[in-house]
View 1 (spheres, rainbow, N blue to C red):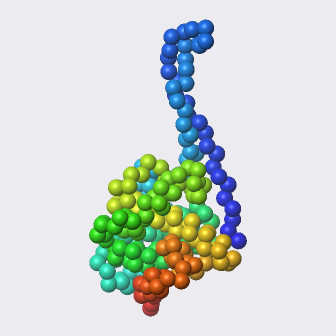
View 2 (cartoon, rainbow, N blue to C red; view 1 turned 90 degrees about the horizontal axis):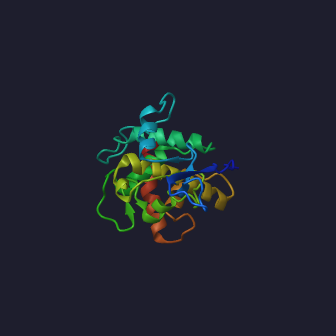
View 3 (cartoon, rainbow, N blue to C red; view 1 turned 60 degrees about the vertical axis):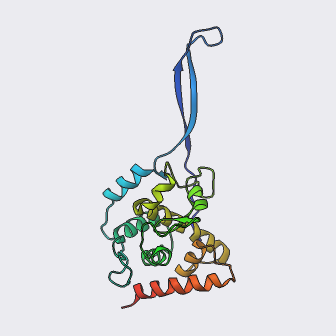
Length: 223
């Protein structure tokens, strides 16, 4: 059973402003506005993404297989995949952990490792993150409120350095949902199908998506 995470405490940041002293406000100070500030470690913004990746301890982390796929640039993003898969496996104490080969096979099936695939009105970037998913990943009151991204612009999704960690975080959400639906640990195939919104689907799209993923995942696992 997946370990339930406790939501991080949110503190409030207040901004003070000088005003004229009056009977109503003898201190001459008022609160201009206040907004929630999430505790460090419960979110990633662009600066945190960059600094975390650069400073990450890569000793012992698992990399996806090399020189197995025929796609152009198929090994270009292995460091990003390995670091962020390890980061979120540890963040969510994933058991079993998410497989970096599954992440790589997902990217192969979604974009063929193209950073900016042909225009898609529904999804953006190398892991094809939808607008709906993009909003959910930054919603402090939404379904992934225990760990969100902050201050990411939609155009940032065209950058693999942003797109890949967001996709892997979403995969962990989908892993949890798949396990809830199945009542057991989900396989890599089942997690990917849930990511694509097809786990319980009976449409022909499910078979096509599964065939595409299996082809890439099988090549990565081949000896």
